[in-house]
Length: 113
Length: 114
Image 1 (cartoon, one colour):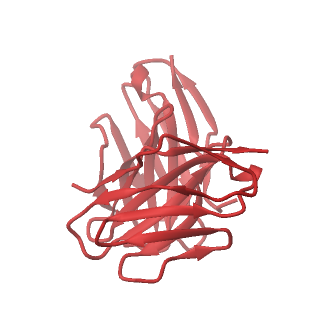
Image 2: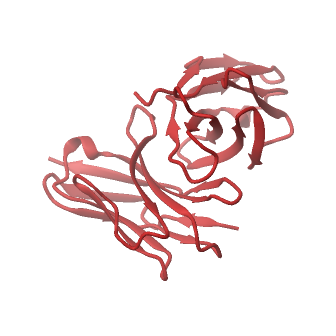
């Protein structure tokens, strides 16, 4: 158990809908990262927040957005969902913002029908 | 752009034997971090080992060790005394501390034969 929690574990929805994925970092970690892993593929970095501020953006679609709240939990919002958005979405956390090791949550599996 | 290449989509090893997984990366930075993560069938991403580029000494964690060749931009993972529980996808990752970008390779699927 990494100490990072993600909810829900599974999510099934229809095309065009909007969903919110939630992540709580390890106690004491200020950074939260979001990744997307499509079937049998590597991880694509989406976005990084540090202590409430956006620090880096990766391959995140405009239909996706995220934020980190004062209690340091983070939410990833996915809207106008398409079939291709079906994937495993991971959240990771680290103490700082630079080269610290990232610890991953168990992931949220999103299925868009 | 920094890219990470894992040239072995699949590898197989006999239980108790040693296997080496390859990883190369491309970067113009001198300071960065490298990682190996393991993803078993549960899909949980588990940190195996970490290497700071400024350290010449290769990192070691029990049965796991790396061969870090900075000039060659190579970062291979050696698993000694392989166990059935080592069977998983292994991902090599590169992190640039300047822009916080983290890049993963496509992964190597390791099978351990009893």
